[in-house]
Length: 347
Ligand SMILES: Nc1ncnc2c1ncn2[C@@H]1O[C@H](COP(=O)(O)OP(=O)(O)OP(=O)(O)O)[C@@H](O)[C@H]1O
Ligand SMILES: [Mg+2]
Image 1 (cartoon, protein in one colour):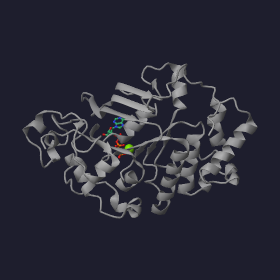
Image 2 (tube, rainbow, N blue to C red; image 1 turned 90 degrees about the vertical axis):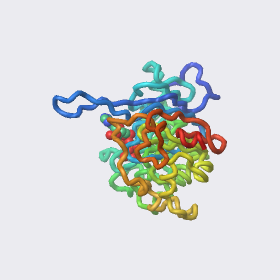
Image 3 (cartoon, rainbow, N blue to C red; image 1 turned 30 degrees about the horizontal axis):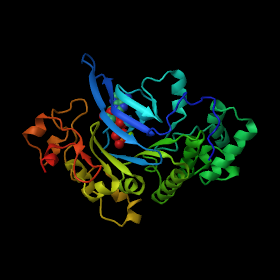
Image 4 (tube, rainbow, N blue to C red; image 1 turned 180 degrees about the vertical axis):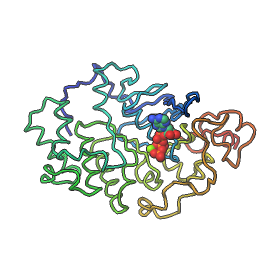
């Protein structure tokens, strides 16, 4: 696959050997008003998240509603600047990048959203939508661009005659194919997908997941893949990160985590997944994590996090140390498995 010639050239010395994505202690806090005459409060939506993603690999991100998954996605796609921490994409520092470098970085990472109905402009024909990124970022001629648009439609399983249609003329699955096509027009090495199949019919979900997997193999794409559905994560991820109230509580190679989740919160999530055979699990609605039935209580408010481990109020194993001291993420269990839990550390 040839990369699109670009008006936003790579920084002088992009490091081809560098990991695709490095997040280092990334945080995003929001100042919110609690009401008239009340002091502002801080929502710690993302709180010191670190990980590395290599080209061609998939990091799955799971956790309950409100744990900060979409906030992470917005930080990774440069939609919102992190409040603290560092981010590198393709060896280039995001947080200190000047305007020219940021323009280049924006061609390196694209987002695929949950709702293919809301993410496509209803007034634009598909051809126009796919052409726009090329027009803005490359010196290609109109004929060359059109050729690329048609080739991309074919790549995502659509046909040339679809180019002149409007989004409302497509099914949900086809719209998600269009959204994926648009995301790939500039050949970014990194896609961030935020629940890309959860709005789709069960029968269509597997087709889109298979398309994403094929595209990854052909193009060595790196994915950050957010999902409530552990079956979907099992299908696609190489490594999995479990988030709880803005923090990573466990991170591990997929096989290790699915064989033996170690954090008490991960254990609750995994216990909620019925044991189905691999093929059916992918689309089984029963594998949806919300709400985890074993957790009867609500999580604490991100406006008012408890001291110590944020999970301690819901944790059957919590002791005095858990109530007082924030556990650090440290190696435990299988190779590459990291857990933030005092009790796991103690065996
Ligand atoms: N712009 C904002 N202003 C204030 N608070 C916000 C903002 N965006 C997100 N939050 C809060 O940050 C926390 C994390 O939200 P986020 O949308 O990242 O969660 P999520 O894991 O994506 O949840 P879901 O699974 O429901 O999509 C939540 O408490 C949310 O209310
Ligand atoms: Mg979200």
